[in-house]
Image (cartoon, rainbow, N blue to C red; front, side):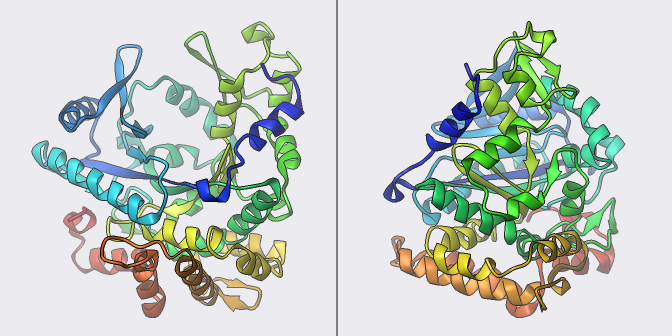
Length: 431
């Protein structure tokens, strides 16, 4: 049971790994549409799809009698509120492995979606559907979240039902290492938004945003980029943040109970009558950490959450970009971002979803900073020098981003150009 702040700090300390044991975990979400009517697939279709995926060695995950996901080895396919599906990958050693995992998953997914007449959309925001058109599923926690989330952020339901992101999970070898990495990943959020922008079309129209997904997350309950994250956040400061953060829900005896009026400190102080004033266990802490929806967050590893989902051709680019900086070239990147002003970072963060590379930060535009960070990342991946079977190192996964920067054209710009020519919905689907 958890009865003190020190136990939360110890939880974060237990994530410390030796550098040689650092892993990479990638999570990415996809939208699924019926080919015949261009509508998001419902739960019945999800069940068909999951049944078809069992043939590839996946095993079902149930909540009561309802199938809500699949697992195979260290990988999981999970179900998001609007029946988006997410692959949470295994903990892998390098980007070559991570990319191979994604390609295997794509192969399986394509066999099944083709058979069931389903289209995949790789974008940060649903480009077609209105919120009221999106079917839900019987996953218990989502019912409670749908009810409670809107009170804390006006676009919370859009976040739940109409967004898809790519997430990278990385390790730290000490508290000091975490402090540096956390400061970097939060400082570069505006750059990530601009570089990975891929959600310009909303309800079949140009939204006038390059990353509408980021705009939505900025107006989501429990989300955003707290200014304190741009300081030197150590484990104790993060534990204080966690303790004073409201609880979204408590999982108790198979039910989900709203925690809206309580903080985690109330939980530790045995002040939650609805569950008999019991103390939280590690599962309760894990649930709480997973429902803090900030741009980056800490568990027993660091989660980077600012990237729009992108197509299969660029899926590995975001992880490679961050791994090059954080595992390969930490000190040089830290020295660069340490000179940035916190208020200017927050201002750039708020402007980046609409202005993209034209956003200003410290007297330069985000295109300049993206290019600078890409060079530092490349240097880091060269230093790592991890080769594939054809003797190429991980820098090959940065080629997509180099093109984006050279052409000053993001995935969002391509989407606007392609779609606005003839407004053909087929342009939005993965080929």
